[in-house]
Amino acid sequence: MTARLFPLRQAVSALATPLPRVLRPRRALPNEAVRPTRAEINLAALRHNLRVVQRATRSPVWCVLKADGYGHGAKAVARTLERAGARGICVALLEEAIELREAGIKLPILVMGGYYGGAWGEILRHDLTPVVYDAAQVEALADEVRFTGGEPVRVHLKVDTGMARLGVTPAEMQGVLREVLRRPEVVLEGLMTHFACAESSETASVEHQLELFDEATQITTDMGLSPSVRHAANSAAIFRCPRSHLDAVRPGLSLFGVEPGPGIAPDLRPAMRMRTEVVALRDLSPGDSAGYGSTWTARRPSRIATIPLGYADGLSRALSNKGHVLVRGRRAPIVGAISMDLTMVDVTDLPGVELRDEAVAIGSQRGPLGADEIKVSELAHELGTIPWEVLTNVSRRVPRFYREP
Ligand SMILES: *Cc1c(COP(=O)(O)O)cnc(C)c1O
Image 1 (cartoon, rainbow, N blue to C red):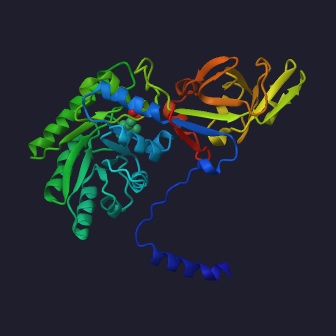
Image 2: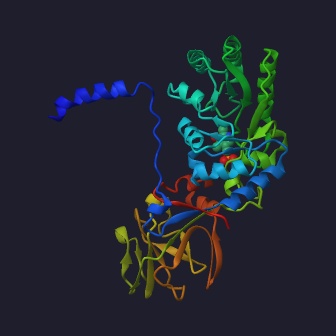
Image 3: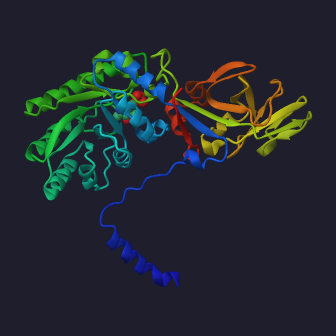
């Protein structure tokens, strides 16, 4: 039965979808939240961090909001930063750019990933600025503009000065630029590059990449093209290397209040707080164990609190028997293996813990027993990873609640 229906269904869907379809993932919504687990996003902290970046440079700030605004929710973050004086937005994916346009964002949106899957029409329809790095992209884009009869499209050319990831190398530049010159439908507005080692206190690598970027600029102007926006600086470069600011800067991590390296921009304010509440309490006797694999055993009479937050929410399982959460303003050690949806913490040394007490996995808490903070950078260090990964691991089943302080 199904087998006979199948070819028909395929034929129908082939007719119905002439263009590549851009799918968007859906995140848990605040009003659908049943459990008390959520990520609170402080919009005032975002505005503060934008001001910190603005004070560090005279160049316009293009906010990098890829990966759903580093896990904070790109739409709300973009609306907040647009009103606060951001001059542009950068994302990695075409899907991310369309989401922001459809949410009413008016700022220029730069699509940095360079992967368009043939959906050139979407770029034009949503007035996006694509990053390109080869002649075929310029040609396809120009053909699309000619086909739709619209205005010329502005593009930024990505130059590979040392990442060996994406971008045209200075040696290949003339070929791509010749294609740009040949096609009036495409206007070279920007030239960009990306640093490999901006977080390092050793600046030689950034200096070298800037020299190569200057050479690439020279090649461009020698061919009679004059891109008006040259940009390179990520968060670390903004605070470490003023020479990298050029005509625009591209901060990501620092906007969310996380320092990109030790001692860089210490007056940032964390924008995310991940919190939940104690949903169960039990008293264990010495010798009792907790969790999958019984990896933790009580050595003393112990009080264990269970919180509805697990590795599927973004609390890495590598924090089992290692990490902490804050309860009543103090640290409670995570005990046993973190499970998909639940985690146990030892609250034996925290008097007075009750059901529904708040537990904080990321961010600060003030309570009857004190005040403390679990920083994203601390978690990253403990996990042997980087803050970017900790933030983007907060999964889409955790609703984001936006608040002014
Ligand atoms: C992610 C990204 C940035 C922002 O980097 P941060 O270190 O988070 O400030 C800037 N430019 C490009 C090309 C990126 O991919």
